[in-house]
Amino acid sequence: MTAPTRSAGAGRTGRSDRAPRPVPAATSDPPVRHRSAWTRIKRDRSLLIMTVPVIVLLGVFAYVPMLGNVIAWQDYSPYVGILDSPFVGWWNFERVFTNPLFWDAVRNTLVITAFQLVFFFPIPIVLALLLNSVITPAIRTTIQSVVYLPHFFSWVLVVTIFQQLLGGAGQLHRILEANGFAGFDIMTNPDTFLVLITAQSVWKDAGWGIIIFLAALSTVDPALYEASVMDGANRWRRIWHITLPALRPVIILLLILRLGDALTVGFEQLILQRGAVGAGVAEVLDTFVYYQGVINGDWSFAAAAGLVKGIVSLILVLGANKIAHVFGEAGVYKRA
Image 1 (cartoon, helix red, strand yellow):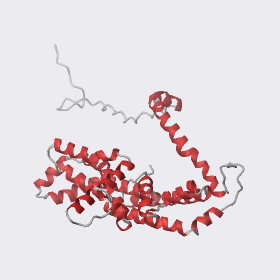
Image 2: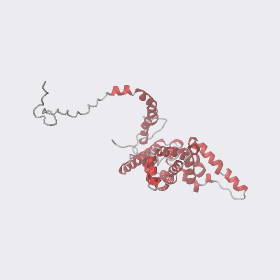
Image 3: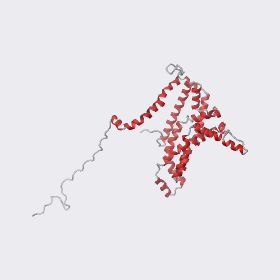
Image 4: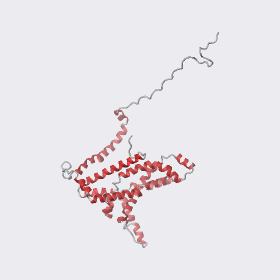
């Protein structure tokens, strides 16, 4: 029996001289199958049904009332109606810009906004950093709950509490008089009104900001802090190089929203205290529109003033959002 012979050209390695098997070409990814709109609606019908009440409320209370802005170009009377009120063009806007009380309200609004932007906006950030450094979860939760509780109080209750503490017949006034000192009434002092309303805003709403910034801090990788400790970074350098950069997107987002509300500062808070300190320091754009439109019955003038305020607020939001894009942040929105 003879041994099998090798094929010619096999050589020492015993390989065949046949051509190597061709490697199949890499196949491309299968085309994405686009679902029809009706298929996507059927797939997400539960989520869509959940959003229907919100869309209805938003449309009824936000978008439908926008149609009423047409009275800014009319000499509107509620007894005649929008359809029968005469058209007066830009006359109401001329009255707004030539009214000195309007510019006084603008000045007070900008002063209050700037003051609170400097002395109120950073406070939730500082408190969030302090709470984040508390190691014991029980203490952190207790402090957070106590600070957040006033957010649920109405402005009527907040002003009442401050009146009972700092008013002319308040607790602090009585304590000073009982010890031979002259009492004082902060609630009716126009010189301290700016500090008063800022303190009220801090006490009521700082807890809400703390929750937002603590949520942002929870996304920071603890390994970054551990690596910085190994590199010899102290607490302040860890805050500066790790914590604050993690908070920067949230800070910029809230700052943009705050600028959008720059011309809307605490209508309920200020209208409750306007009579005690006078319109000279407490009259802002919202109270000005209320007294001109509702109290005095000049609806077209108030609509024109409110429309000017809304347009300026929109420009502030768009401008601040554009600046955020320049610095590489997403801002409120960003084009895909």
